[in-house]
Length: 106
Image (cartoon, rainbow, N blue to C red):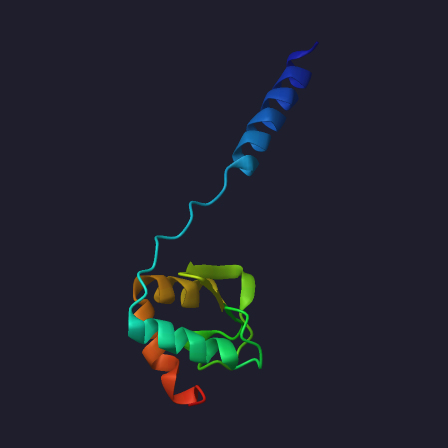
């Protein structure tokens, strides 16, 4: 086997190892009673109460959240529209939910 082929095999193996590593899960979000109520209201915005917040809470529930930016929050899944919104939600979920509160139905 030539050095060229050996190098390609080695690089392919390294690429497979790197691709198989996943992103660590986000930190656990502690749900206060207020946050749980806000999540329930945000969950109902799409007409379903399935514990999936489908609209981005940082875009005042107008943008569709995307599964690749989803964050677990207790027994809810909060879908956000971008990495920026996801980072903001993870940094301070209570603040993020307060930003969206005026748009939520009462």
